[in-house]
Image (cartoon, rainbow over all chains, first blue to last red; front, side, top):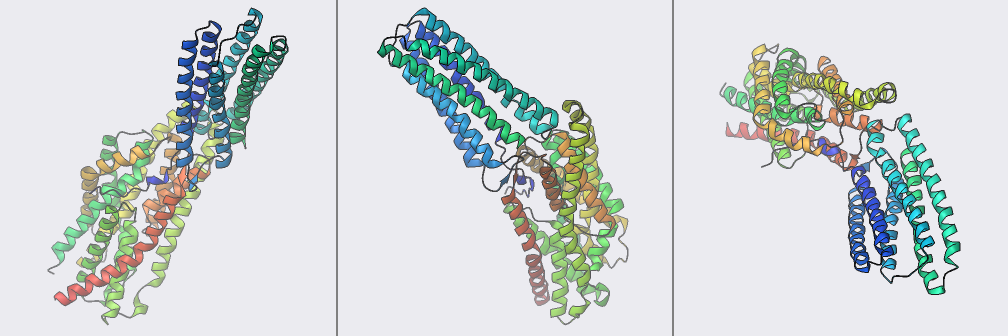
Length: 222
Length: 331
């Protein structure tokens, strides 16, 4: 007989820790993608495929956490933030991992030879993407302090500043990718199609990170 | 006077029950926020619950023993029988509820049981229905509505002020560090308040059975001892389970919930109202949550608690009446 009469079940499931974990996994997917690009550039297609499978696993892991959050955040839970905004943020964040998975698959299609200048541009873009991800992870890590301070003005201002920084880097990335696109159209058609696919997916990933950052701000700042 | 020893035994069982479960419910936030270790909580709770029961418990005991049923109109044998039936039915209900994990209130159980005794005496033709002090009962029921409300209000205000004055202007880690010590004090406060209010549930009817006009210190001490033994023997296990369920609880939140619970309970004790400590802490936790202090509150559980709260009075009333009649039939 357990003989326990506890009132502390009133403390319901808190989705915030899992949300941060989900963000970290999305960040991990982008890091793997950057590694995959390096392997692709060097023509190591076996390595490209291996990393692709790893991204698959990471995306699945993100899906499991997403499902857990949705299953456990029941109607009866009262959270300090709007539950539906929180779900929207989760879905937007989840798109990051999905897009990484798509791009990882595209990269495993075939190796194309392109001028060194294009690789150089791509490397610069990936470097900025890495910076964007680091900033995003830093932003999401504010969750704990936001909750601890019960959304104090200082914390909220810091979040706001972080989002502005992310928007700035995303804009820079957008311009870099547009310049890359112009160069891509100088390539022969088969190469151009694949390279454009890379560029467009990278734009979408960067945009998803920016969207998630904005949603994060909306969840915690109302 | 054949029932005196069984009454003492059942009274002690009730006190043990209170110590084993309710003390853990009252002080669970201290373990959840890691302000204190289980051993420290058990040690403090044993001493302070005993002191609260011994020195502050007499007012509520008086309300439960004599406030609802005018025992001065009944013979001593009937009072003893009624007291035995009341404690037994309340204890049985608490045991059944505990078995099913329902967080019922021992205060509600005993008040329902004493009411059942009054109704049984009326059915037996020994008392007029008008003689039952419905006004006192109404006051007690009102206090159950008000206690979670005041717990919530105080919890909200306490945490809101901490947030506005301290958390928004100073370094969070430094503020929390100070509140770790304050939470130890609030844990002591809550243990003392709990002992003072809940000892009545175990010793109120015992006191009536002995025919004491004023609750003697030895009965309060006996109740306090029962509670302390409950904490020492079973509170450890309950606390361990309860503490693991609470996550993301900081010291400022733990302090706010405990401080508001203890203040409400002690004020109710002073006014002689046997309120439910468990429901006051639920109110306080909700109050802190409404001030955006708690990551997640499950309203479904709050609903379950409210249902078990509503069920307790009719069940214990009927159960006492049945036990009373069985004892009459058995002669």
